[in-house]
Length: 487
Image 1 (cartoon, rainbow, N blue to C red):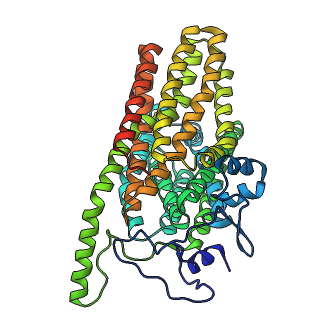
Image 2: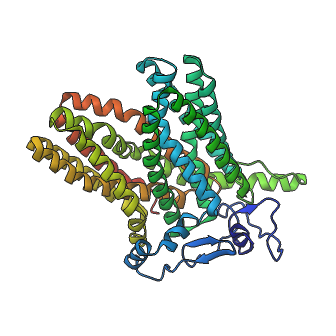
Image 3: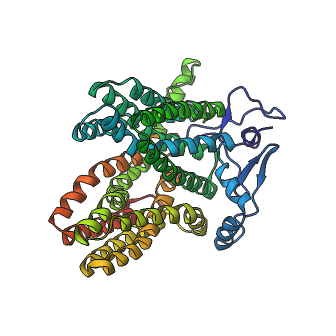
C-alpha cells in the first residue's frame, strides 16, 4: 500500500485515480462550504515514506518546538521524512530536478543566447523579461485550473512546458526562437511554485504542511547552488557543452513531469470555481445557489489575501538585494574584492539550507502572520546595518557587511518560511489556487521591479538605497500586521 493510498483511506485530502485503497471504503462526502477536499485527519507529526508505507517521525507536535528542531538536525530519518511527507520519493526527485533546472536557467539562458546564438546582451535580456511577464500573465489561469480540483496535473504541465522551452532552445537559430524558448521557460518557472504549494497543501495540513514546504525550499536551495555550478562548468566547455546542457535539462524535466503525474493527486469534491454537477434541474439550481453563496462568503477572505500580496512587494526585493545590491555596494562603493560578494552569497545559501527547516519547526507555535511581520522588521534592520557598513568603508566595512548579511539571511528565512504557508493556511475553501497565484504574482512583480529600483537608488548613493528599502519593508510589515489573515 502506497503512502497516498494510506492517506486516502484515513480521510486524506488527496485522491489517486485508479488506485483504490485497502480496504475499499466509500469516499466521504462534503458540502460546498467545507474545506478543499474531504476531511483530513489530524496527523501525529511529520510523516515519511518507506517501501511499506508512511512511518511516523520521532518528533511530534507534543514535543516542544526546540526539541523538534534539535531532533531534525540530528536525525537524518526525520529530515528525509519531511522531504518525502508530500508525494513520497518520486515527488522529492521531481523537486530536485526543478531546483537544478532553476539553478541552471538564470546564468544558462543568458549565456545560451549570447554564446550559442550570438545575440547581444540587451536583446537577450529583453527576451528573458518577456518570458517573465508571460509567466506572470499565465499564473491566474493556473490558479483557476487548480481550483477546479487539479493538483498533480498542473504541476506536471509546468515541467512539460519547461522541457518544451529547453527543446526550443536547441532548435532556435535566432531571436524569434530564443524569445519563444524564454516564454515557455518563463511560464513553466513562474507557475511551478503555485502548483507545488497546491500539491503539498492537499497532501499535508497544519504545521506539517509548513515543514514540508520548508523542506522543499531547502532542497530547492541546494539544487540552485548545484545548478549554478553545473552552468559554470558548461561555460568552460564552450557552446557545445551549453547545447548539451539544454538537452539534459529537457530530458530531466520530462522525467520529473512523469514522476509528478504518476502521483495522480486531485482535490475531491466540488469547488466554488466549478460549475454545478449534472443532475436534475432542482439539484442544479441548489448546487448553483450553494456555489454562489460559497463565492460570496469567500470574497472577504480572498480580498485579505490580495492585500497581503500587495504588502508582499517590498519583501520580494530581498532576493535581489543579495544578487544585485550587495555585489554592487561591495565592488563600487567599498572597493572590495569580488570574493567578498561570492562569500556572502555562499554563506547565505549554506545558512538557508541548514537552518530553514529547524527555524520553521522552532516557530511552530507562533502565528504565521506574526512571523511574517517579524521578518519584515528583521530585514529592515539588516538594511540599516548595510547602510552603516557602507559608512565605515574599506575592508572593515566589507567585513561588517558580511556580518550583517547573517541577520539579513535570518529575515529571509523567516519570510520564506511564513509567507506561502500563511496563504495556504488561510485560503478560502475551494480557492487555494487563486490565493496562491495572487501571492506568486506579487512575488514575481516584486522581483521584476527590484533590479531597476535597486540600481536606480544605488546610482543616487547608498544613503538613498538602504533607508528607502528599510522604510518600505517596515511599512509592509505594519500592513501585514493590520491587514493579513491571522494564520
